[in-house]
Length: 344
Ligand code: COA
Image (tube, rainbow, N blue to C red; front, side, top):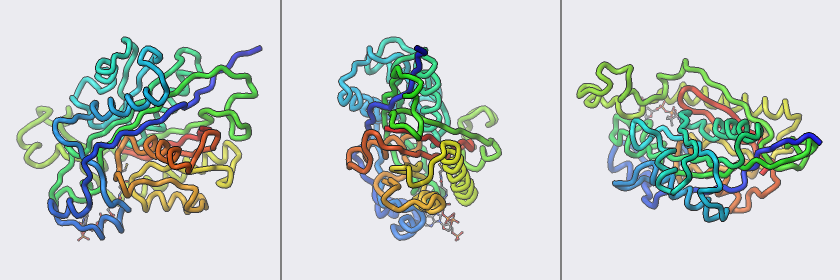
């Protein structure tokens, strides 16, 4: 009989640094207030690391948790895919640092750079690698420390109030299956059912951290440091519109091509960029409040880690369970975007 492989996401973990920063705390650093931030974004607080914590340190905490939860050892993995926009160093990425510090064998370890679309891009990549039969178990790592990049003054307030630090880890396994057991929306087989991805560099300058970079004369200069080009910059209104359009578009396409309606979905997990964006996607999909999971009020936008943090928390709270059909949608700098339909 023909042999197939499917990708099952067996374990999720999250790690949020302990340092809570409320909207009122930010209002002591810049001209902002709790009412503005809550009304425009839904955020009440976020977590910031303390020195000398770096992005790989958060990632390592999340990976330790997922290993403990799964009873697996580093030697049980054959690939690490890490996602971050805030690596410890300009190069190398954080994946080899995680590999070394946690004693993984000398397996391949790569960073991918798709910002807030990290979960959907990593899912698609791992799914293709596992389904091909080339790899057996892949560790996905998501970690970002935005707090060290942000302009925490009034100049940077439109971006600074939105982001927080956090990390997550996910274990993806190849499971052998029959043709009938290949995950589909119409059967009960757990695993990755479908993913959809997109990008459009027309938005590259609408959400970016400009320097250090080779587009800057000299890569890094006192001028670019002085004028704040080492902080993330965003045209908030344009990004908002693109995010809503693309997230709705991928949700509709995934539902249409898998022949499901909103009723079939146990939970929509949108990237946590702004509660108003999540609400617009929910309304467009005609979903009730209880079918969407948000935690942006507690953590802000943790960039690469929002969706796996949400899935981990939603599982823990009993909002979703093994066997449920979950739809994720994401949008990030690049622009990049995508969605995934997964049976847990
Ligand atoms: N506190 C108080 N006032 C602020 C502020 C803050 N933190 N940030 C901006 N403002 C002010 C602006 O200066 C502006 O004042 P003005 O009218 O006097 O010029 C006013 O609030 C409105 O600003 P605007 O940027 O138009 O607000 P908005 O309703 O578009 O909300 C965002 C701003 C950033 C919350 C919103 O655009 C957004 O969420 N964008 C998308 C974010 C996103 O998804 N990013 C990541 C993608 S992965």
